[in-house]
Each structure stands twice: as structure tokens, then as C-alpha cells.
Image 1 (cartoon, rainbow, N blue to C red):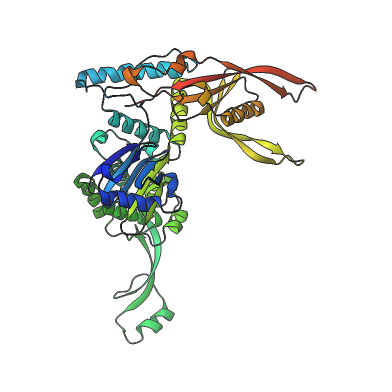
Image 2: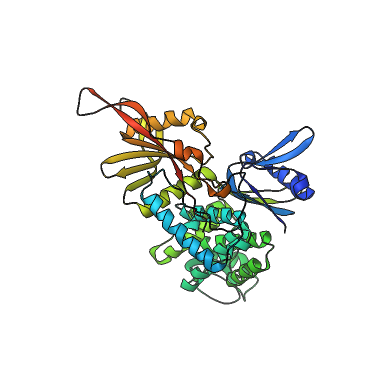
Length: 454
């Protein structure tokens, strides 16, 4: 199956890919709600599609579209791939520089090269996978990629293989079996004979027994969901390697039926302490079977999408890097404050802060923005209003706007990172302990977070 790669907000026409593939993507974009993933436009008689700020994969019968993060400027060109020994040395240098930067995130004079001298497309895919692994409450965080050749494997195949390897680990620990009551008309006596049903069904067939028995079987909601996921993935994967992994798994779950009611089975799933290792695999099943980022529709062909908002991924990435390299207390999506309170102290209009950083005695409110910032005039006024409102309610001493450090020609930092200084905004806070208002200046810092490509 052919793979076509684009980056966020990149537009393309049918001339750059197969016409049938393009038409299947147009059909996908016209489904209600899917315009947030990819938009269809028509200008001067020319049809074209434009990716939005969701990254991941859209697979159709005629090909696969991979939407990658925009990590590089328009003037960037990939350097030559180095020898493996040089590449390993570069990765170590990058790792040390990343740790140094995020340990002292206020540093503005930063010129280290974080590009590991691979192909730009591979680097963008690596960054995407790394971001996915930083997400909380997802199976990506707990899955291993060490055994996968992610650089040469389509993204959807990577996700499928991650699921299969996670399933093999589960099988090693033991497939869950439960005692289940089964009523069945058998050719032999087993369990308790049900006289009412026996008379109704076997009045003529004296050789049969209608009985109820407790059986130790693997037919439970968790295993049915796994079987349904494997069946779905088998219909999606064109790769011999992935199909081999899926078929091995299907042999293990051969006697287990598919789920007839997926939402009900998810609600019925219970993970006791003896089967806590099922949590990750069930999270994978949720991603493939009913996750919000998963979409399926029927038409001339079928299309499947596994897409993630890049704003959320970047926020998760920055929070992970800060937690890994700082001793500060960092809370992502802190939402314990409200804009308004009624007389009964009930809150309305929840204030959800991207990053709340407690650094010694100083509170810092940070807002992450996944977009290229070329000059200070590009900063959104509404973003500043929101940021200072958060600072007011959390009594912060400093606010940060965090943008990605995109790589440009010769890996030079953006000019704004050299010119941008700390701005100050007058803010007044009213203390509960004092009857008078306290006024002070709160600094705004614009920071550029380097990206990790390995």
C-alpha cells in the first residue's frame, strides 16, 4: 500500500498522489466532524486538500496518508546521513544539551543543534512517537519501541505492532479465565439438571440433558475486545510482518468470540489486582475500537483515522521534559480555579492552566503554543488576556509563553529568540489577609522549547 506524507497545514492536489486515493480522502473529509482533521477546498476549478493541526494517519483502500508535525522551517534541507558511530555521538550530545536546557528553562541564549542528522521526515516521525509516549492515560506511555524498526515502518503499522508486542507480554503472564454459568442442552450430564427446561426441550429426546454448570472459560469482556481488535487490525494491515504478528495472536484467541456489543463490554471490564496487567492492552483496544481519535465510515471504500491534536502533544511533551529535568512541582492542565463564584461558593467557567510550575517560592504559569513565532506582533492578544487572567487567579510571580524551536537553514535559531526580552505587565491582586490591594509587575517571558528527534 502506498504511503503519502504531508506536514501540518500542507495542501496537496490529486496530481501529487493517486486519483482514487485523493477521492477517498475527499469523501473522508466530507463526513461530519472530519473537517477538523483535513479540509477540502476548491479554488479556480482546482480541488485540493489541506491538513489541519492533527497528526497521525488516515488509511483508505487505496493508500495511507501520514500527517507529521511541522518541526522545520520552509528553508530547511536535510543534511547527509552520517555514519552510525557519528550518529550515536550526535544523539548523546543532543541528549545532554536537552537535559541542560530543560533544567534551566529560562535560558534564552541557546544555540545547540538538536537535529540528529537524519532525514527530516524520519525525525518528524520520531518526534511524534516520542510525544505520544509522554501522554498520560494512554497505552503509548507504557509500550516499548525498542524491537520495532520505526524509521522504515508506516505509522499505523507501528501502532499495530506495539499492540501485538504488548499482547504477547500479556499472554506470557496468562490469559484471563473466569467462572461463568452456562445453560446448555448437552449429550451428557454435567452440573445441575434443570427439570423445567428438560421437559420443554427433551420430552422426546430422552438421551439429552438440559443442565447448568460453572465453567472456567476465557470468554469474558476483556478477551472478546482483544479478539475484536485483532480482527479489525487484520483487515487494516497490508504488511506481511504485521499480519504475521496478528495471525499468531488470533491463534491464541481462536476459541474466544468477538464482542457483539463493544461499548457494553468496555463497561463490563473489571481489572482485579490479579489481572492488572490487562489495563494497557485494554487501553490499546479503546484506541482502535472506540477512541475519539478513531473514525470509520462506510462508503465506496473504507477509511480509518488515528489522529491526535498537536497542541495537546506539544503541551504533554514540554511537561514531560520539564518533569524529567527539573526538581520543581509541575502540574499540567491544573483546573482548581473558576472565573466566577456564586454566593454558595459554587464555581463557574473553569480555568484550565497548561502548566502550573512551583519553583521554590515562585509560582509560574506557562502556556504552550504549537505554532511558528516569527516576531512579537504574531503573539495573540487573546492568549495574553488568558495568560494574565490565569496569573491573577493563581497569584503567579511570572508567566511564560512557550513556542517550539523550529529548525531553519543551517540550524540557526529564530531571530526573535535573540531579541525577545522579558516584558512586564501591571497586575493587582487582593489578599484575603489584607484589606487593601497589593500591586506589582509580573514579567512575561517568551521561550522556545527545543524538540527531541530520537
